Length: 414
Image (cartoon, rainbow, N blue to C red):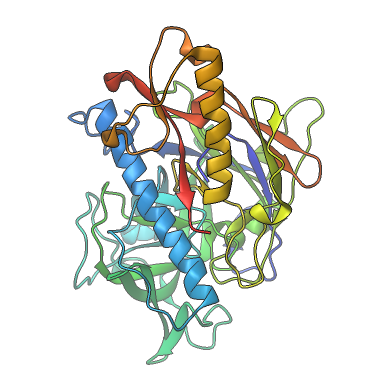
């Protein structure tokens, strides 16, 4: 699911603490940088806004195919994964320091709630994608350690023992993969609201020595945030009380986006409802939400409960994903939403859909004056009675150069 300008609070239970913390339990805030923001060190001023939107949608399509293939492969491990395009980078980056002494290097990593491991490219690297920062050299850092085969984190299916060390081979797409050594190192997190930095020793991460991918955007790797025990947010639980939150804003926003941990999380004032993150014993550790139904412009859709439920074979379900810019719904659900949307635009605004394949999305209209304040709304209804009203800016893509807008949703496999 897309970043919906939504504040999400995650409570994570850590079965065992892998990281060693220098300070007492406290809070921490890290600034998140959108890949298309002018705040990004990799901002490409030559791209038009239309090109950025199209690139974002194409990346989301690739990522959705990967998410689907992971679920299908889990349900049918004997099938061959479908051929997919090169890895689609995530949307937001975070700056992290890795190593100590002369080996300390600062890197921008893509945050990914669908990845179980934080990794960066390391020397020596046989086949690596180009990056702007020097590759991490473990020989220069006195705190670097290789994870041995007897370490409790060295477990299949992600990791295996080779020559007394724990190695990994992670496939993101067909013929798109990374290989490396599971390692431990000191990470430095710079607090966004002060000059204070937090050093975390003995953090498990991946030292990638071979990468077969076309990784656009120049960040040096992935900041893993899944529910898997080796993800960085899981390992930080002793520091953060097992809590993290993020509030995401579009690249044009003047306000910064933040990833907050522990005591830095400030609950909204007044009464608010929460919904539970569903946990399953899956290697991927995706974040599933218990969505019961949708409403469009106040009209309840009355979808069957199974529409958004996870099936017994591990397919289906409703997940929130930091690397997808558009929402994905099943064919039945999206057809129902589009039917109500079309009726609204035709009967109330006298608008008919336009057919323009360059926009990349299914339901699009020409922009008319004042339309921004007359667009329909959508509400997510969770099983525990909590509701979330989506902002119109999260529900529709605005193509200013084309004077068009589209419903920011795509079809998923059934």
